[in-house]
Image: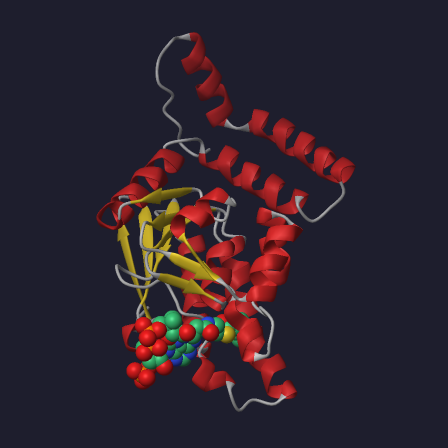
Length: 259
Ligand code: CO8
């Protein structure tokens, strides 16, 4: 599959999706959303891919949805234009593999919201985050009002969304928006290191753990616990569970096969 606004490279079981509209700071238009959705679908189906890194490259993650494309839309057209972003964001969030964002430079508006669909965010020390939509007379319509408070709590999310302020990587780390801050030249190496660590584990256990967390965030505690217990029991039907526990008892490293 050829893409124009993103690049996809696969190496050692890890796919890297790079947003590729540098002339507009990787602003997200409908073509980007459609291509991200196609890539997520393809990578989800590719058994050779066990983990995904999403990045904007060395200079910028994404400066938000494409304001030029949005500016003259009416409400009906906006509803239509939001659909591809929702499809892409949901596909990425629900990929049954770990997804890590590697963020350098600006991650604003829809760019920040895109990073919220991934499991883990690693920031370069030059990264800057914000939801500046309020300054455009709109609100974060790419999941920001929903995913951000679930991640960092309602108070901090409201402060960011109501002010439109941009925060640096250290502040993003302090409030739990990112998992880790590294020097800019180490960003991709660090993301790959983390991806390798994740994919060395039992793939089905990781997939079900991700599902328990994602589903659990949307339901009441008791329903979430019941789902977790079922997934826990289900893992005892896998070879990976036998291997993992046998390896522990034999004091050796497990050799997981994802079965
Ligand atoms: N959309 C379109 N073009 C953009 C965007 C954008 N979001 N951001 C930057 N660009 C373009 C600029 O217009 C400029 O193009 P040109 O050279 O043709 O004038 C080029 O990128 C470089 O940008 P700047 O010259 O502005 O670069 P600076 O380094 O001076 O400033 C900033 C960088 C601070 C990031 C500045 O570009 C900026 O403020 N950008 C807009 C940030 C913003 O408001 N983002 C939120 C957008 S709204 C949104 O994301 C809603 C999400 C809803 C999701 C659902 C979608 C359907």
